[in-house]
Amino acid sequence: MKPYAYCPQCATPLIEAEHGGRLRRACPDTSCGFIHWDNPVPVVAAVVEHEGKIILARNVAWPASFYALITGFLEREESPEIGVQREFTRNNQLIVAYHVPATGTVKLNEELADWKHVAFEDIQYWPAGTGYAVRDWLRGKGYDPQPMAWPKR
Image (tube, rainbow, N blue to C red):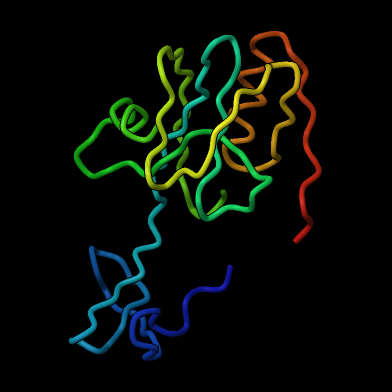
């Protein structure tokens, strides 16, 4: 992946500068202060088992046909377990996935547009990110999930 050439905040050409004991791409404009830390983003994901099926959800920003695991970014002061309780691809992310047996009523937050139950035997995993967590969990339960068609880049 090609590194940033221009500041995403002010469009000034970035320079190499020492920050946090390492050379990093940074904006030389002191009024902007952008630093490209390029750290992986911790993401929590949950294989939510509810009423004998898995819950898949659709983010409000996704196409109407795409559903995936419940995921969310991990806040600075929380454990992965708390992040999964709060939240109920592929871009420099560290994904921590859990199996969550759940009961009760499903409620969506402002980030989720819809949800659905899917039987274990009907799930096709998406060959990226959290799709591998679904695949591995289902294989552990004795199922042989197949990959869904995935757009080529």
